[in-house]
Image 1 (tube, rainbow, N blue to C red):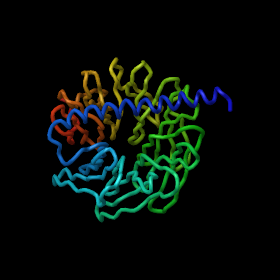
Image 2: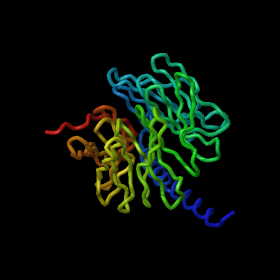
Image 3: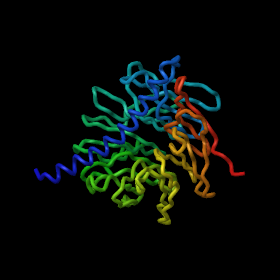
Length: 332
């Protein structure tokens, strides 16, 4: 095999591995510190919100995690059925929740209707499938049947399944809203360090959003707007792009790291390190105005947003992790 190909592959794997080491090791240190105190019954990770319904991983330990839904209006928590299960990365749209679940040591994609409580598989095979996102009747996820990560779209009402991207190397971290799917793409090899691509479902058309030599990672989409974190200036900043007009906006440009953006409508939220800890910040695209969402000295992570409601996890230095729910600030 060509040694340059092997070298590029190793560089690509290094950058992919590095981001997860930074996130997971950081989270482990925070959680380990907090476990010196009293441990509550919930250990929330990866909350997802749609209107007043929230679903999140409840990390029982480093092996098992079940899902819990939370109704903001009633204040009721509801654990999903099952014991000693491993369910990660939930997403929610209306009454539909999707997630990845380990079955016979292989990650598969499942769904549940919160109204009925019925759990059923969306896609089962001998190959790993991860990080599902849901919008309307569509679920998008990462599929490894070809030996690397590709993007698959499923209409769970009709049962139709379509691989919308199977280019070489890695495509992952998908998101979906309405007619559009976005993901992080490494088809140009390790030196590209990841670009952002989009797919228009009605026309089966692919669109390349970024084509840079720096890292463009973790896209999120709402309507015609896409946001992601870009390492253009050495640290990660937040950028936004309009799929219709082609307009690109630099949302943040700060020496500290801004990362893991999520958006709803014209509102964006992310994790921000400018205050030497992890805070949640937001940006209103219409107002072109930035807001600080959380102001405590603890670490806040995993934000999500629906309409003007924000959910994230606070990791207290002398307490247990817990969900925080905030309304996006209103301009004075």
